[in-house]
Structure formats: structure tokens, C-alpha cells
Length: 176
Image 1 (cartoon, rainbow, N blue to C red):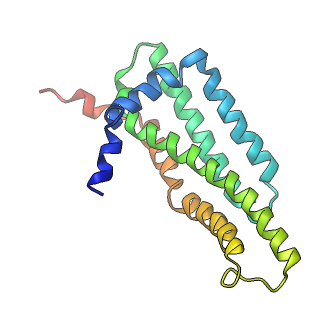
Image 2 (cartoon, rainbow, N blue to C red; image 1 turned 135 degrees about the vertical axis):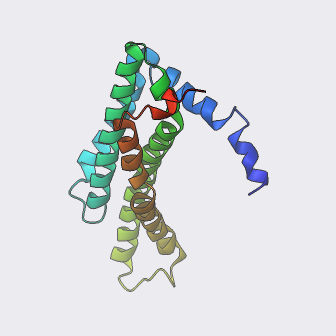
């Protein structure tokens, strides 16, 4: 853990990276790159919303995606009005929302492929179990990993969206 800490500062501190994401990366090309990426998530959700295993997870991803878009639009509007302090104050929470949402999407993309591969193995060998088939164990592990992340980390997106929606600027109003 000590040695991995350097990964948080190789390209600048987490706060600098968060400010760069919010202030430059998301706003680049008038937000077109961000919206294109959101469109990819939406296509994944639409393709998997009825999936027996991934459908409920895709629904949770959809809620997180909507929250991320709402916060992005709110912060963008504030920035356009000249209020940069509030989005800057919550930039690390925004970075976490972004990472959790896009991380969940990446894991669910892998899980969708893995689910199909596991189903093919089961079709060829109906008695196969993860205990006796390492390939099946690998693919099922991908599905379980995605489910774990969605259930245990993706809820942070809603918490951070609530923080942003509070418009609580009390920390900015402290007189020193």
C-alpha cells in the first residue's frame, strides 16, 4: 500500500486531476467528448436492460449515469455563470463519481462477454462447475466482480450527487 501511493501523484495530485477533469476534459469540445462517452454507456444499458443477470446491474448503472450527467450539467452551468468555487470544492467527489460510473460500465462490458462465454461452456459441458473448469471459473468471476462493484461501489455516485445537489457552500463562507 505504501508503494502504490505514488500512483496518486505521478501525474499530479488527485485534486489537480479532478480539477483538470472537470475544468478541461469534460468541457472540451463543448462537452461533445463527454456526451459521446455517455452515449456509449446508454447503448450498453439499452442492449442489456432485459438481460437476466445483467439487467438489474445495467439499471443501477443507468441511475449512476443519470446522476453523473446531472451533476456535470449543474457544474457546467455554474461555471458558465462564473461560479467556479463550488464545483472546485467538490471536484474530488466528481472525480470519484466519474470513475465509479465509467468503471462500472467497463466491468459490465466485460461481464456481458464473460456471461456469454460461460453460457457457451455450460452448453458444451452441462455438468461443468467453476471448481473443475478454470475457464468457467474465470468467466463467472468476471460476472461476480462486476456485480460486486455495482452493489458496493456504484452507490457512492448517488451519495456524491446528493452532496453536489445540496448546494451547501458553508465551507466557502467561513471567515478566516
